[in-house]
Length: 157
Image (cartoon, rainbow, N blue to C red):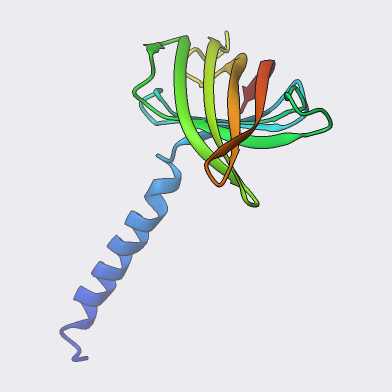
């Protein structure tokens, strides 16, 4: 590079560093917690304060065939059925694979936000429930039917 091009390169490098460093200041907030089963919960709140996703892990032994445990996780994303500042509700139908088994999961969740009194703009603590059911199939044939009882959860920064 020539001597004249160096100041331009230095200015470009400084601008690039500023752009790369900036997203950490405006990044989404991740809230984490646990269900009543001890399984992980993650909520992603955007910089605008709106919930971007809710991921709840679950496990059930409430199946028609005794002695079977099904595990999985359900991720809820907007649009939610109810999307208010301090209250969310959502439903999701999705498939999950566990070995040769394929499950059709139908899950529902409801959540309430408890704001931080010291900082009302902060994400606060979310708590709620998840429930639903799943059909377990092998080669298209129904082999089991399970219920997701009401599982409580909380998540905080």
